[in-house]
Amino acid sequence: MDFEFSPKLVISLSVILAVAVFFILMGESLQQILGPTVRENVLVQSKQKDFCVAETSDTVSRYIHGCPYRQGDNIFTSYTKGSSAINNRSL
Image (tube, rainbow, N blue to C red; front, side, top):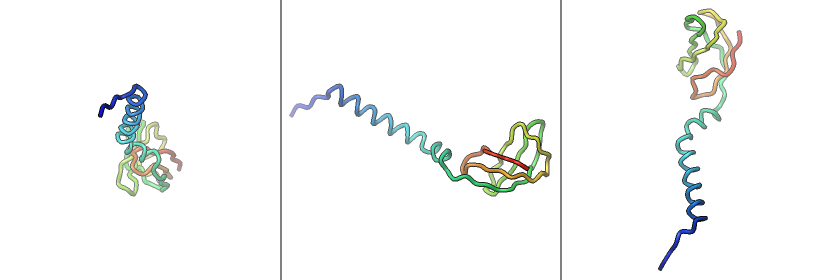
């Protein structure tokens, strides 16, 4: 039995494989982007020059660049679970 790969079949299989590899490699990143948003009050642990460090309830230290707060300030934050970035913050 002779089976030939047509160009359309090869292209289709390549695209399917590329999409599968993309989702496998980016799955964790997509989960972080699409993960649940957590809102909580946190304490500014430290401040050096223009950035602060706040530790949230999941014990991940999150950095705030261009931080207007002082060490010891209690701020309201929102962040995506599994990500180290703070999405929003306010006093």
